[in-house]
Image (cartoon, rainbow, N blue to C red):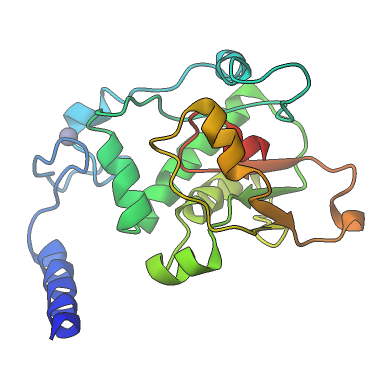
Length: 218
Ligand SMILES: [Zn+2]
């Protein structure tokens, strides 16, 4: 009865999260009940958040993978700068595969504050990168939507999750080179809103991870 087993495991995990002290999602040490900004992160990790570079530097980094007028992105903002084997990647995995909606929302708010502090154009909407319907069924959530909701709260700009959809079920990008990533996401997204709605407007696109910028650009 594998299904029942999975259900029991899920229930047990749910109960233990309520009954036992929480653990820091980054270093996995237990977290006390102090009033902190992010409740799933211990003080030590909180004080060493690896903040990303300024938007100018981020955009320059992305530009290195593109030639001429290939790049359609005007600005880039990020909250964290992470390496592959970084402990902080646990936060990304938690968000992506375990659906830590609260963390996505809180970090989205923090990202929103950063965007606000650098100044930004007037956005018509905040667009979470959509996941394919099949993947949505499999996971039950879109992690980028949680982040977008946090950003939306701070910038007072509505979430626009009905502008684009995922047309193709793409393979995961983690093992691909910059050039392979571009090909992998070619035609991956399709407009669902009519041109008359989006024409002449500026949208802020939100994703959980940006590596070479190929998904954003697509
Ligand atoms: Zn920690």
